[in-house]
Image 1: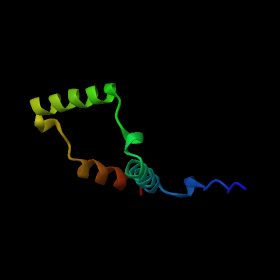
Image 2: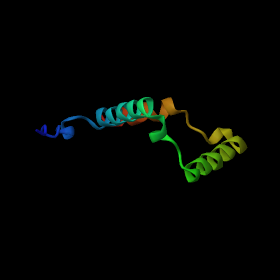
Image 3: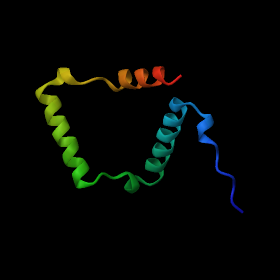
Image 4: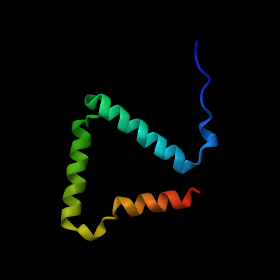
Length: 74
């Protein structure tokens, strides 16, 4: 017996983003291999880290990004 699909559109964008983060965290905690990065993703991270180390002033703290994101979606 299948359950009806929840109506996610009743949630705000901020709430849906939080829900997606919570689901992703639960998957990673339960099955770390499912959240493993590909070699291309690892290379992209290295590229971005190298760019950041060359110019740290270009970075925006996650807390600021997240705060601004949630402010605009209420």
